[in-house]
Length: 528
Image (cartoon, rainbow, N blue to C red; front, side, top):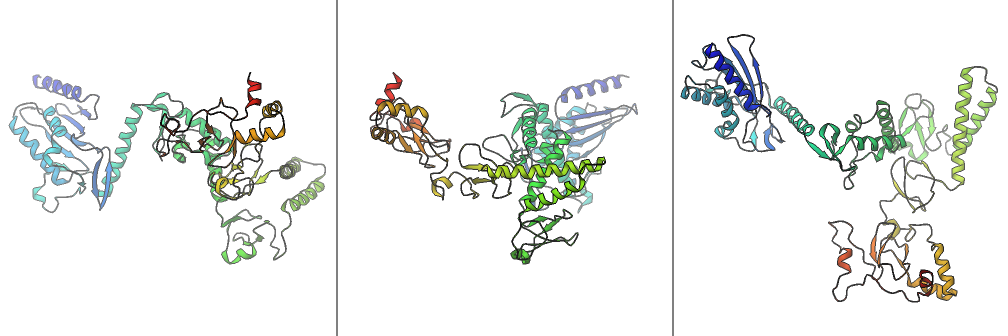
C-alpha cells in the first residue's frame, strides 16, 4: 500500500511538472497493480526551424514530432525499474538504441529510487546533446539495420521510409503552428483591432493575418459584384489573390459556388485559343490551321461555325451582325407564340423578351458612348474620371481613347495618348469671376500661364490658385511635385528621391515653399 501511495504521488508530480507545456501524458491504471504511462516529450536544444535532409532534398520544419516514451511500471517499483520502449520518427534506430542505453545507466545509478520524472527530464533536456545532433539532420529511420546486434529491441520506428516520416512531420508541424495561432492574439491589418486566433485568419499565399469579419466583408462584396479578380490580400503592398481554401470558410456555400463559377469563367475567357460551340455549348480548341479563315469545328456535334460571329461558317463572306440575327430570330419566335397557352410557353416568352431587352440595352449603351473592353469585350460605360480604365470583369487596364491594353500611367506620359490622361481640364467656375475682376482677356491669359504648370508624370495641366497655396502640388495621377522646378517628391520609404521636407529646406539655392504669382489682382479682390 505504501508503494502504491508513493507511485500515486510520483505520477501527480509528473503531471504537475509538465502541465500546460507541450509534453503530453497518458496514464492507464486499468491493469493494477501495473500502471502504463505514455509521454510525448518535445526534445529541447533543437534549432527552429530545423533543417533536415531526406532523399537528397533539404527540408525545414518549425516543429519536430515528440519522442514517444512508453513505460510499464511493475508492482514492486521502485525496487525494479520500469520496462520501456522509445519511438521517434526523426531519429534512427541506431540513435534510439543509444538513448535506451543511457536510460539504463541512469536506472543503475539510481537503483531503488523513483525514475519517472528523472527519465522524462533527461529525454527532454539532454537527449539532443548526448546524440550530438547538428544541422542539417540526415533523416534515415532504418540506419543501423546493417548491424542488428548493435540495436536495442526497445527502440522502434513508426515510419518504414523517409517519405512517410516527412509526411508525418509536415502534418505535425501544421498542427502545432495552427494550435499556436489559435492561442495567440493578432492585429487585423484592416480594422486595426486585436482579435484572438479563433476570430482571425492567416492567408495561405502571403501569410498576412486579418480578422475574419473584415475578410468576410471583402469577399462578400467582390463576389456579389462579380469582381472575383479583386478578391486579394487587403495589404496595400501585397495584393496576392486569395486561394479558394481561404475563401470557402468565410462565405456561405451559395456565395462560394458563385465564386468558383465566375473564377472558372474568367480563366476560360482569358484563353485565346478557346471558343464555345453555339449549338451544344461544348469547349472548342481553335485549330491553328483554320485560324486564317476563322473556322471552328466542334468535336461533340460536328458543327462548323465562324469564330468571329458564332454563326454557321460562311467561308469568305463578311460576318452579319450577331445582334441583328438574334433579334430577328427572337422576334419570329415571339410572333409564333403569340398569346401563351400554358406555363411552358409563358416561360419561353419571358426568356425571349429578356434577351431582347438585354440586346437593346447594350445598343443604347453603345449609342451613349459606351465601349467594349479590348480583352473580354465586356461593355463599359464611362461616367467621369481619367482615361485609364479598369475592366470590372477581367481586371485589365486599358486606355479609353485608343482602347489599347496598358500597364500604368506611362501610356499618358510617353505613349500615343501623351498628356491626355483626362478628357479636358477646364478651370473651376470661380476662375471666371477672378478673371473678369482682373479685367481683359490679355491679362487672363497671362495669369493662366503664371499659375499653371504640367505634371511631370502624366503631362496634365495643374493650376495653382494663389500665392497663399504651397508650391507642393498634387496631381490626380498620384504624383507630388514642386510647382517651381517640377521635381517629383518621394512617395514611399524606399524611393530614392528627396522628400517634401528635404526639398523645401533652409539651404541656399533650395526652392521656396511659397512664392508670389505675378498679376494677382483678381485673386486678391475676391479674397478680401
